[in-house]
Image (cartoon, rainbow, N blue to C red; front, side):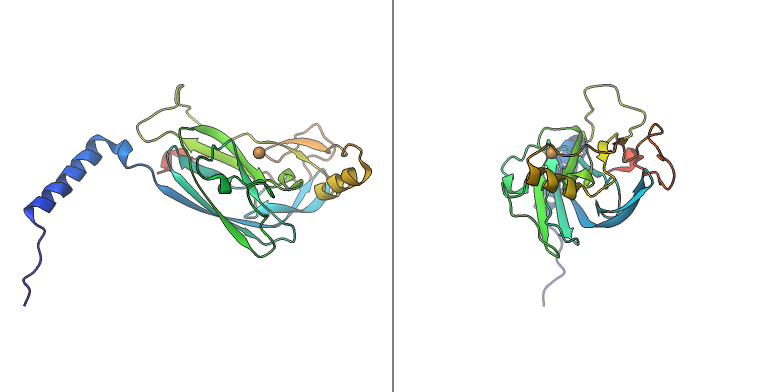
Length: 229
Ligand SMILES: [Cu+2]
């Protein structure tokens, strides 16, 4: 019969050496894989007294924030629940050896069809700060977009004083009509596309437009970055 198995002295030494390295050099172990699921789905949104059934990610407008640290691997499963073909582009992310995760439809991938999914998988290399993700087919980016926040590695800092608070600011445009109709009309006529009805900050048109507040529910993008691993 076998005697109970205890780790050998040599393997204990290796283990202790590992703990010592982790304690002294935490930057060796901080790169992790962050998993997200982006469900592309319909959402009723009212702006400028016009209610539209827009395309959103996870029922949010603007979409959810993607937070990672420099060096992390990011895995995003995008599931298409709408009738349009969809792709998502990670704007500004240098796709080093991960070109298939870049997102432009018909350039690096076929679009994700209705009820299909695609998993984007990329590593953030030597980049930190705030970027943007958005749809990258036709004009779906009019409503499908959100922030990418890349924090420095643990025990590293931004090349400026640490901000006491961080709030992403996303600029966008609101169309009272379906943006897909705007671009398809422009392509048919050969003329320039009709302009949007409002510029937005974090999806909100601000007080200078007619009917800018009635029915407008604010979108909260406040960040609590202290608790990010
Ligand atoms: Cu882009």
